[in-house]
Amino acid sequence: MFATLSDKLDLVFKKLRGQGVMTEDNVKDALREVRLALLEADVNFKVVKDFVEKVRSRAVGTEVLQSLAPGQQVIKIVHDELVLLMGGSEDNSLDLAAKPPVAIMLVGLQGAGKTTSCGKLAKHLKGQRKKPLLVPADVYRPAAIEQLKVLGRQLDIEVFNSLATQKPLDICREAHRYATLNGFDVIIFDTAGRHQIDDYLMEELEGIRDELAPREILFVADAMTGQEAVNVAQGFNERLGITGVILTKLDGDAKGGAALSIKAVTGKPVKFVGLGEKLDALDVFHADRLVSRILGMGDVLTLIEKAQATFDEKETERLQQKMKKSGQFDLEDFRNQLQQIKKMGSLESIMNLIPGMGKAMKQMQGAQPSEKELKRIEAIIDSMTPKERANHTIINGSRRLRIAKGSGTSIQEVNQLLKRFTEAQKVVKQLQKMGPKGLMKGMKG
Ligand code: GDP
Image (cartoon, rainbow, N blue to C red):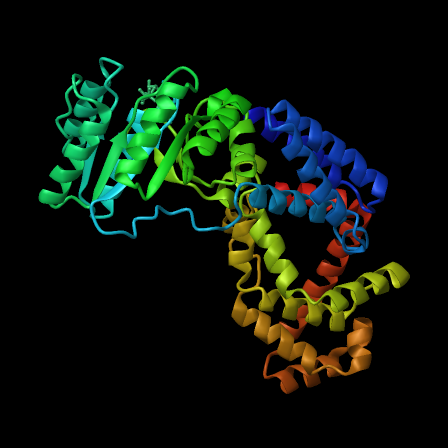
């Protein structure tokens, strides 16, 4: 999905991740590339302009430039703003809060996927224990009525027996009466389409809308047509007042323009996405999930959020300063870091959030400390004197015995911890040499 856009943004992000320090110029360069990638994906020009400005103003804030991982922060801002652009976390579920039968009208151009989406929607509602009635109201395209009847048979969902000789408004009235008499919860109207917006069609649709007072008027948009779909959506919205959008053919090689601009331009949310020709290829739309797919970031964002929420920034900064000054970290720091890790949840659950890391951890079975071990390590360090924590080389045999007794552990366990600690010191030194760039590479694994 949106392969070119994904690749382009990935390149920008790769560069950003490599930045140890971020300046306004870095941000500007990155945003220029983001802007180009979005324009190439056929996102509406004005939408791109507003979007880039929003990201820029947030990204050049001191919060980002002074933060520990500025590149990551910018990526997160781009992510968050993309989600907002597509409607944020608002509830996109259908509004069916009315006396049944509740009417839903699907509108759009010919070939956008209206009839198919009627079938998919009926299946979706049936899955929610609703009783939907499908109503073909396109009397102009000869095969349209039959197409819906075929879908209905496949789904075992009743299709109203419309006749091509009837007027669409009459079909709607009769279907409504039929649905009321026969206990249907929802009526889904498949309306006529055209190759482009025309007045005659709009008048007919307005007539149907006024007669039925549908709870939802869903515009079916072909994502492959990019900005054109957005313009048509706006045209339908101005005449009919649509309530939402079904974005079809996202499984194809759509560039992303329609998905990224349609909410911003029409103000109406995408409620469903079509991901194939089959009748179960309809998903409820979630902006955040689509953005994560576009950015190919998976759960790394969850990880960053988790780390941000739990890591004590002051402690991290203190440690950074200390490392800069002396290039050393001691047992006291070791314990503080362990405490932070503990706050984030189990080591395993954290590692699972990093792509590739969960698997690697399983292969290394036993190499990482368990929760119980963490507690023991803490107890051992607690039994040391501040002097010992600051300089572990003074911990001789008699001190080891005292520490083991104090912490309720054995000398072997104290030895083991000291060995681990000296290894950790080495690793940290190595990581420092690699810099943030190398660290990210290691994480992406
Ligand atoms: P209508 O004229 O708007 O009623 O469009 P149809 O429902 O007849 O669909 C037109 C074509 O698009 C058909 O070949 C459908 O199978 C196809 N189609 C509809 N939705 C999707 C989708 O989400 N993905 C793909 N790949 N094809 C779709």
